[in-house]
Amino acid sequence: MRPIKEICEILEVFRLQDPAPKSELNYHNAYTLLVAIVLSAQSTDKGVNKATAELFKIADTPQKMLDLGIDKLKEHIKTIGLYNNKAKNIIALSQKLVDECGGEVPDDRDILENLPGVGRKTTNVLLNVWWKKPSVAVDTHVLRLAKRLELSDGTTPLSVEEDLNKLPDEYKLYVNHWLVLFGRYICKAQKPDCNNCPITKFCHSTDKRI
Image (tube, helix red, strand yellow):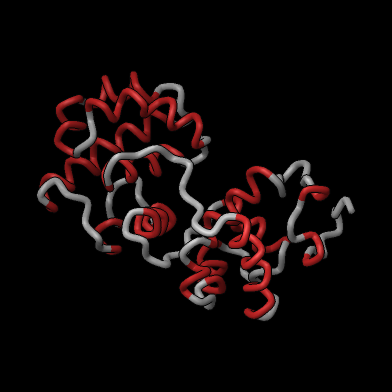
């Protein structure tokens, strides 16, 4: 793992390019963001946005989702991978939010992590994007790039999260977005675009193409 000061230098390059990156998921409120994040597991944001464009017009609260029902929900999200299981979780978490939280999505990590289909990563994304908390979500992009760029010695999402949590809050707030966008469009897993990499001078990867 690099020294924190050096990691901050790398992230500063990203910040100069994009000071306040945003999630590419479309949402209207905390609930639709939560649903979108659940749907995005092993799916693309673009695919989720296409599926939820009409869904969120008619089901943007837990109660409206329950009123819609699981069969109609499946019709809206059937183009998304694992849609059957995701539909079950969305209905179940919606029921729990209605029964235990007054139909509202709470700003409470313990409650969120115990919702059906919602784990630590989803909770971190929600807390970060909706409530602007410096919570670090570690998905496949972040896990891969943390190793490649020597941002962490961790080998699991939790251990990488613990390392990245050593960063100042100003970087923790956006590190997930920066790394996800970087991994999605530049440092792609199969074919990294090293010629257009803004941090190539920091990269020591053996498959570096420059």
